[in-house]
Length: 387
Picture 1 (cartoon, rainbow, N blue to C red):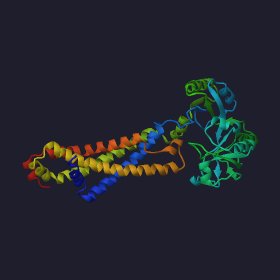
Picture 2: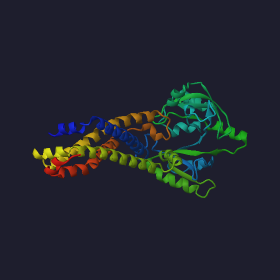
Picture 3: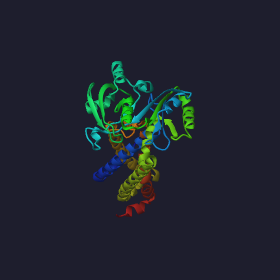
Picture 4: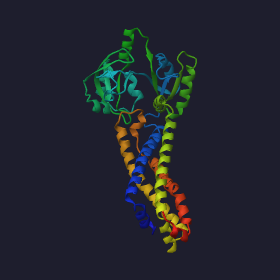
């Protein structure tokens, strides 16, 4: 501990080089922090409260394939299923016929009479709930969506169909609050069925969402439902709602491998930057090492001082980078979500510990070779060294 002032003074002795090195480390740790937080949120987080009992049944081939609506009654009869509803992604355009992120939000059709039984954690005034259920052209919007688009009770919302050649004329009947999803629009599935009939299409369902009676019933429900339709014209795949949300990432490829590859590349880059800095710093001070040995410093103490300088630079860069990463996570939480997990993106304590550990390991790894070489140099060779 008594060498800490010396360590910090030497670590920042070349201020320009130290500033550039710390800046590089901070930016790299920031990127690494966001990617690690995203990886943890996607693949190691638990479902939010209210979602752990919900399951989704979709077509086994793809989420774009549809299933007959009569599957619902078969699913409802499965032991352990408390409630089930049909819901269908609608898509379409709002205010513009171009893909504009400003006006993009999820638009789903669902059975209004059972919607709140499957999503019991949603909070909505009783009068608004009844108004939505009584109006076939009514809709409800999440509180976040209402704030973003300025929707109010009684507003008219016109959505032009894209995937479905049906134009919707909706009236906002309610605004709901959800602890983990408040940026969607929901309208009555009956309204969509009328559109199918006008086109001469048979009724069909994109997905079935069910509420299980208990967590223990979930594995049995998944096996039973999929076995029931295994040989049907539209075979099914049943999974938790949490896993269903992650399945949308499959369109982007192997996201897990992509994130791990980028993290590996960033870590290797940090190592090269830090190693280059420490190699130059140690090389400039070989004569100083000889002086320290002359004053009685042992090889172990000199090695510790040099490693301490490297770890000090790494920790300073890591601290700045982690603050930047937490701020960037805050910005990403406010952006339209690709998957629901990004709405809770943050640097968790476990991720924080990993990143600090990585910083310390990089500090040691980048300096160990030049520091060990300098510490082993004899007094005579060190004093004769010229650069």
